[in-house]
Length: 269
Image (cartoon, rainbow, N blue to C red):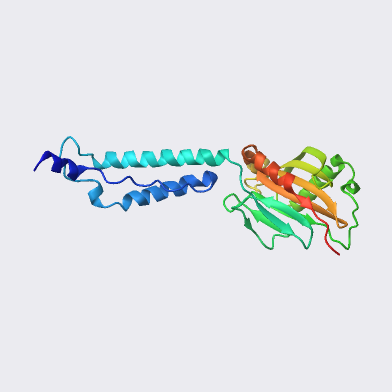
């Protein structure tokens, strides 16, 4: 057999594609799974079991490691680009009740949650967005100033949250504080209030224990709540955003963008 024939018989096949990265940080698990399936589906001829040439043969294990490492590198580069770009939010317009909001494209709508509209992250259930509207028959708001100053509105918002989170379980304790309150005139010329609060929930690890030393309080959850308040159609509208406190720093820019995009609209009579 000639040297030319030997070289051609061990020449490597075409490179395997790396595939496209999925949305934001969710890419990792799906990407590695697809890479594993892609490698396992390769024909046995891709990794020659018999060395026809000592100089050109590549061990199967080393070849797999090289391909997998290249795939991970390409996926990581794609993810960095995804983080660098801003999220293309979806827009929800309620012409009947009169408001508009934006939400992340991968969030899903949940019906029967008690709000006028409710979206949540399908992976991190503690992250959600909702809109509450006062009843047209029991409220006649003319302006968000009817709530008082932003500070007074912040106290009302916090009291409402704590009322909703009341628990009949023994040993449950809530810690809360108002982080900030502010007002702004948006591009539509309307006045809006913004309120941010933090609420922590603690519960005893053994709520039925008789001795106090056997009831040790542990942190159940620590969340950031952001509200935007606006008035139109004689009704009070409240946009609510909820996220774990540990995720807030990473997602703050996106959350601020959602808050800034919230608008109340006049409903045709």
